[in-house]
Figure (cartoon, rainbow, N blue to C red):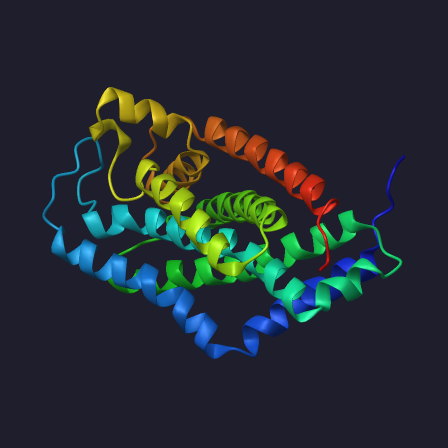
Length: 257
C-alpha cells in the first residue's frame, strides 16, 4: 500500500534538528574541532609530502580538504542515529510513534534534519580551509561538491538509523559505530590516494562508499579524481538510496520503549 508523506511532520522534525544545533554552540564547535585539528596537524606536518599525479602547486593541505570534509560528514551523519536512542530514552520517540503520522515521514524528517546540519558543518569546514590555501575554482565546482556532501550525509544517516533501530543503549551504539566508521574512513583515501594502497586493501576501498564521495569532491574542487565523477555520483547515489530504504525498513520495526 502506498504511504502518503506527511510534510508537516517532516518539517517539524527538520526544524527540531536545526534548533538542537543552534541551541547548543558546543555541538557546533565540537563538530568542527576534530576535522580542523586533522587538517591543521596533518596538513602542515606532511605539507612536503609528494603527491604523484596531481597538478603542480597542489599542496598536501589542499589535497586533504575533501577528505577531512568527508570525515566530518561520516562521523556526524552516522552518529545522528544516536538521537534516535536518546529520543527513546527520554520518551520523545514514544510520543511521535503514537502520532497519526506514518513512520516513513518520521524517517524523512530525521534524514533531512541531519543532512542539513551536516551540510552546514561541511560548508563551514570548506570555507575555513580557504585560509589554508584552498581555492574553489568555480560556482559549478562548489555546487558539485555540495551534491557529494549531501549524498554522503544521507547515506550515513541512513546507516546510523539502521544501527540505532537495532540497538537499545548508547554505549553499545558508540562501540559498534566506531568499529565500523574508522575502517570506512581509512579505506576511503581521505588522507592519501588509494592508488598507494596494496592491491588487497585497494579492493576493499572500492567497496567503501565514502571512497566515491571523497573522490567526487576532489574531482569537483581540485580536478583530481581516481574514478570518473559520474561513476562517483551514481555509486554514492545508489548506496544512499539503499541506506535510506534500509533505515526506513528497520525504523518501521523499532520499539519506542
